Structure formats: structure tokens, C-alpha cells
Image 1: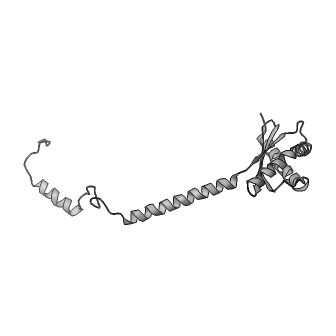
Image 2 (image 1 turned 90 degrees about the horizontal axis):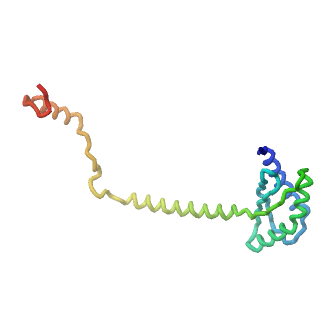
Image 3 (image 1 turned 135 degrees about the vertical axis):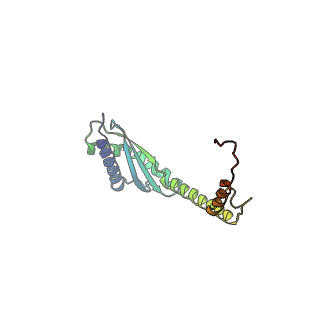
Length: 163
């Protein structure tokens, strides 16, 4: 059984190491404005996935992906030495598209707000198709007392009464 705390510590350390090496040691001109956002490592500590974001368009993202792919060997050896593991984990770089997802969700929320406002506007102008109160309402107490007084005056037996 693996220690989840150990796996999380190693993943955090990998994220810090890769960010540090990318910032200070990689001099590839294809490398754009990159941010290492997260790292995950398997329970056996053999495979690590590093998530990153790039500021810029699709061309900047593609060139940064190529730069990271070419620097993968140096990054793997640096991570392996720093972690002190028997096997250096293989690194896989994945473009983190959180910003695109956030924009998509914001657009969906704005559309929902607009639709809700339209429904509220239509509801404010609406009127009842029939009566305002379609259900039978219990009579007031005074009306009920009058009706019960009339019932007490009847001496005729009813169908369900036993005498």
C-alpha cells in the first residue's frame, strides 16, 4: 500500500523543481510565458504528469510544448537527482486549459442570467388564466358557526346516523 502523503509531497516537489528549472536553466527561445500549475505522480512514483499554462495564442502554446519536449531529458535527470528515488519518474507535459474552461463557464452563467431575467420579466407581466385562487378555501369561522347551528336544528335522522 502506498503512502498518499508521500506521493503528494513528491508531486509538489516535482512541480517546484520543474518550475525552477524552466525559469532558470532552460534557455530555449521557443519557451513562452509559462506557468507550471500542477504535477501529479503515480502511486509507484514512476510516471509524473506536469500541467502548465502558456500566455499567448496557439502558436505560442505549440512552440512551448516543443521546447518542453526537447528539455524533457534534462528536467527528468534534475527531478530524479533532487528526489533521490531509485528510478527517475518519466515526465509528461500537459497543457492546462483551465482558462478556456473558466471562460466557457462564465459564458454559460451569463446566458443563464439573461434567460432568468427574461423569465422574470415575462412572469411579472403574466396574469392568471382562470381565477386567482383556483382551490376551494375553507369558510371563515363565522360562516362555519352559522352552518353548524342550522345542522343542529334538524331532528330528522340521516342515513349514517344511529339512534
